[in-house]
Image (cartoon, rainbow, N blue to C red; front, side, top):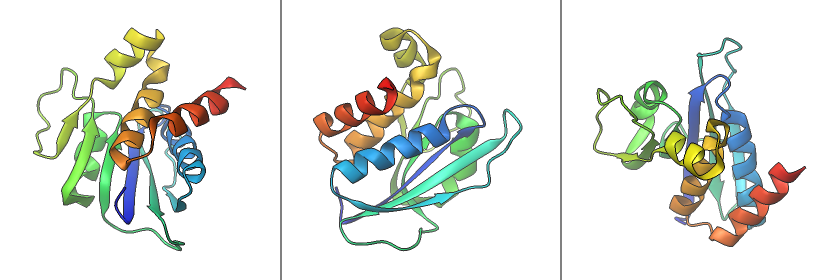
Length: 155
């Protein structure tokens, strides 16, 4: 991982933005990093855009940054909304699916929903797929992420 990283997770209300962010925080903590979480005021209306931003560092952090290195968007609408805050050299993880209208050279098109259904049998698990991608792109060792995910979702 870089010396410092800013990660934004975004999606519609009900898509698991908060679960993904809180699980990622546990993964980062287990990996020995410091973090600061900025929580957007959540939309209570299903379909409204929500986001959480995590600033992670080897050193203590006390605030968030307005820009982000890694955007994990559960839909192209959220990717489009938050793309302006992604650094020029940043990455946008997005499941473009059938929506080919959103275009950005920083997109890393990951079929989150297809993988969730194909591997785990339900769309509900797209946030777990997103956690794996975000952890990998952040440089977190796979065993650390796996252990936290198993613990977090097992009970």
